[in-house]
Length: 216
Image (cartoon, rainbow, N blue to C red; front, side, top):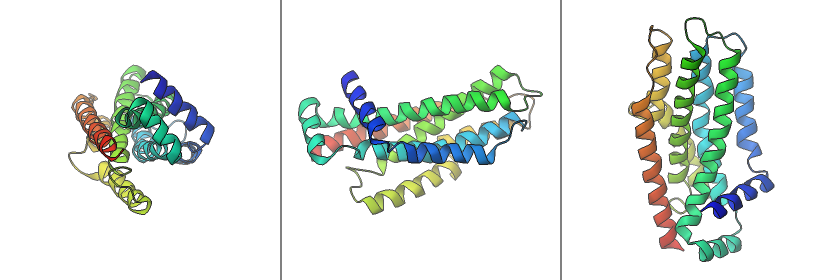
């Protein structure tokens, strides 16, 4: 799996397809936030964008290989493992971006009434939940489950939106915890949402990888 992850990461960096989602996210954060804003509100805004970015990144990684190269990779490592490596590569890349963003936002925001460690921890947990939820959306809305590019993109956008606004979604729960923490003396950490996001992402990756194995 390590070799597959290195291969997928090298493909992602060389293809430059990562530029579109990550630059869009940088613009989203840069335009919407200013130094000195209340830290929890700023963190909530910043991590919201990680859901569609993670979904987009998964879609990029699962479609970046030419068909012939994908066939060779599947033959060498197994189609399920190759598919899983693409999902993990995208998820890890967005987690890295989310972590850097949370640390930067925490450093430049107004932390009055909230300890830096507490705010940073809540932000990192919420970012992880949003990335995992977005990765699940991306996994379920691209090949082999939805091979059509048009339908794949439409369901990815709809799924990302629903993940942010639907009660019961891990991402919605994590963002609600940050919003609630801004109005209460104690900041609830979204551990339950994290567990739910891990379960959702794992189930989605397992389903898609098995489907990739059957379609190989």
